[in-house]
Image (tube, rainbow, N blue to C red):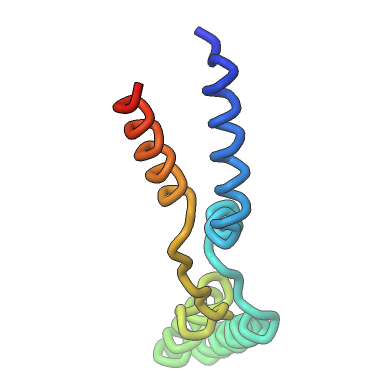
Length: 120
């Protein structure tokens, strides 16, 4: 069943208000989580390469402790490069919350319609 003209206009207006009033929310919903900086990724890759080197040295010298330490370094570096802790991610400043918004506007319209129906 198609929407009536009034319902379609209301839906379009709600969409416009969402994009205007809640632009930050719309932007964050589509982007997912924030990305780490290049320096954080480089640090993780360097740690992984050092770990691989230690692992090779540990196997070549038959020292299991050095090999295990190399594996831990390699795994930790790769994990750090892929998903660093939240404290290393770039954070944006919080935006102030406005009193007026989509829900506020819809509430006012509902009250206006309800009062208009009583008068008729």
